[in-house]
Image (tube, rainbow, N blue to C red):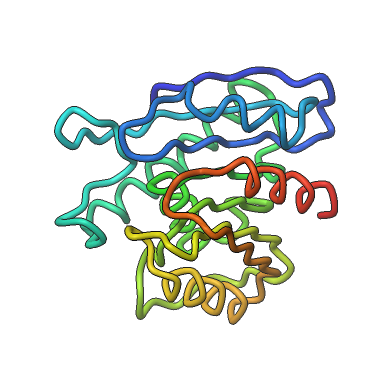
Length: 200
C-alpha cells in the first residue's frame, strides 16, 4: 500500500496510523500527527480503491452503503500491511494508534470489529458503523475516541451513538465528542482528540 513512514523521536511512543477520508492522500492527515503526538512515529497510508479517481479504503455501493465483501477484504489487507510495515520499519506492532477521518475512520473501525489487538487505540473522526449484526472481538480496555458533528449530513448522530454502544459492549473504553458542525474535520475535535490521547 502506498504510504509515508516518519520515524519518531521517541520509540517507546505509539506509531500513529493515519487514514484519510475519501479523495485524500497519505499526506492529508500529517498535520494531525504533530497535534496529537509530535514525538511519535507516523505511518500514513493511502487507500487502495479508487472511486471516480478519488482514493478510498474500500468500495461502497452508494452514499452510506458499504460494499461489505470489499470492506472485509480491504480490512484484512490493511491488517496484513501493518504486520509487514512493523517488521520493515522496526516499530512495535502492538503499539499502533489509528487516527482516521471519514472513510479512514471507517476502515479503522473495521479493524477493531474484525481483528483483536489490531490497534492499541483509535481516534475516529466522523465514523459510521462498519458492519452490523456481527460479533466483535474482545476489546476489553481498548481506548477509542469518536468525534462527531451534530449536523453531519453524511454521518447521522445515531451512527456515532450506535458505534459507541457496539464498541462498549465489546469492552472498549469509548469517549464520544460532539461538535456543532457538519462532516468537516474541525480544529476543536483535533484538540479534543489530542487531550484524550495524552490521558490514555
